[in-house]
Length: 200
Image 1 (spheres, rainbow, N blue to C red):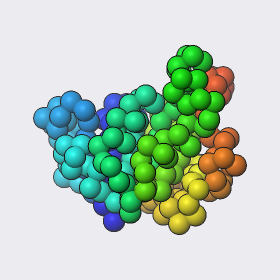
Image 2 (image 1 turned 135 degrees about the vertical axis):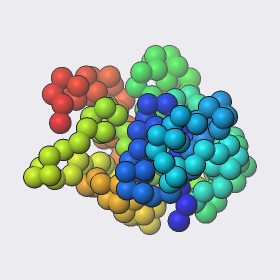
Image 3 (image 1 turned 60 degrees about the horizontal axis):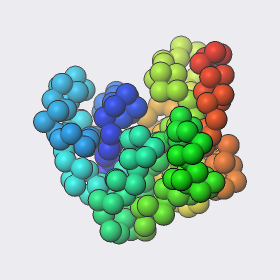
Image 4 (image 1 turned 180 degrees about the vertical axis):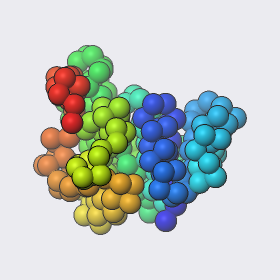
């Protein structure tokens, strides 16, 4: 199984650190070119390799950690995503209501994004906590931090849950995107404000 992260801002870089901490090889890419990733790959070591986006989409499992509006640009890289699992880490709650309506027509963001990677099995996870909270280490006697996993494909959900566990988390599968996954779409800023006010 091969892994890639597209997007190397705060979220993507943090995800790359999770992989590096467990010595799991991962490719990283961004829209600015792999030459901009030297400092990050030097920090994280040999298990993290900078590539182009065209190279990143060849991986079996691709984590898309870009701005919500940029997801469609990633989707446009391939005409057919069959055989791949795409992990949607995006959140659209900071977009204005007008932009959300124009972009998603009142639908769940991941339902729309699934159509933007035709043939792929889309999984939603790593998005329900502020990245600073997700990255915060826990004392050994506390256990692992929970992440919720949602997909319309049970096999893809199980595969990503296994990955999350390998990265040091306690995954909970919540079912299909329109069912349990509806709870982790983070559609209102209030959700994140409460997490910040009362950090886990």
